[in-house]
Length: 339
Ligand code: ATP
Ligand code: MG
Ligand code: MG
Image 1 (cartoon, protein in one colour):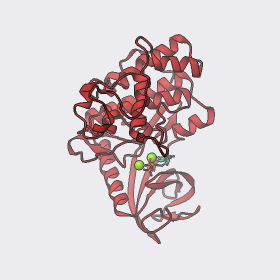
Image 2 (cartoon, protein in one colour):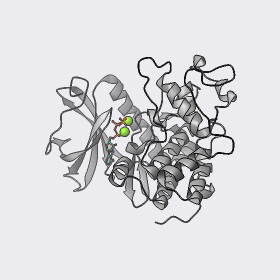
Image 3 (cartoon, rainbow, N blue to C red):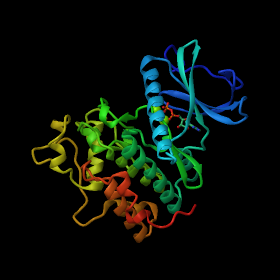
Image 4 (cartoon, rainbow, N blue to C red):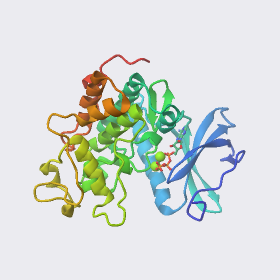
């Protein structure tokens, strides 16, 4: 990726925009590398995101700036915090691989992925605090700004205090009334309407990803782990993903399949997956609660409370799935926060 159109080569002690001195690499993604820098003007540390230079990455950066500005304006006009990372400014840097958009962000803590990797999983109370914080942020972004994030995952949610998080990576976010994206979300966190191509997307697409994230924070394992087909397999990765959903959440409602744009050959006329064998949970069996108890030593009460909560976030039907705002009022989140 360190080629024309790709990442900008960065070294420790490089100075950008005559003021930001690079201290260390914080992270990277498909679009960028991100660096902790000391701002010589203010004496504070910031995070510098240096985008790849090819046009599609530049466009994503300009979109990210546009969305972040709108979120910030809306938060200011409502005199509240957005819980989305604060964009301080942006500039361009020209290098051997092209012209790169650089975004200066407030410096946040480590990602939820780092947090999970360090301890295996997070304590129940901390997960509830994080979930509350994230849903509050999304309720604002969805309902007050009209934006869908589309890439909720542990790498894109950063700790900024005990049980407090902020959302980053608005590169693929879009305004709900101006959507053109057809393929959204990172595989493990992709909602059924994303897999099946049911457009336009609605805010609950992000809520599905939150459901997957909550399970992962509690267990250290992704809720879904779709398998790439091997030679001879008759199914695609999408079908493997849907099969795992059926095994945990039961059959896909025909009402959802009626609206789909892709995958017609994946199903029988009775709405059963055709190319991959699946066993839906037997009637009355709460499969997620079972997994939490059997594989992760949850008490029956905790397992059932978590599963009842997740069932509302993981409804197959986007219009029946809980909104971020409604999810905040569900019983699992009602204890007073610990911070
Ligand atoms: P993706 O491949 O998910 O689209 P990306 O290239 O758009 O990623 P970001 O997700 O914005 O990049 O940032 C990459 C990583 O950099 C994050 O996962 C995180 O580790 C780190 N990071 C980003 N912003 C900050 C920040 N404000 N403070 C501290 N670390 C950050
Ligand atoms: Mg990212
Ligand atoms: Mg991104």
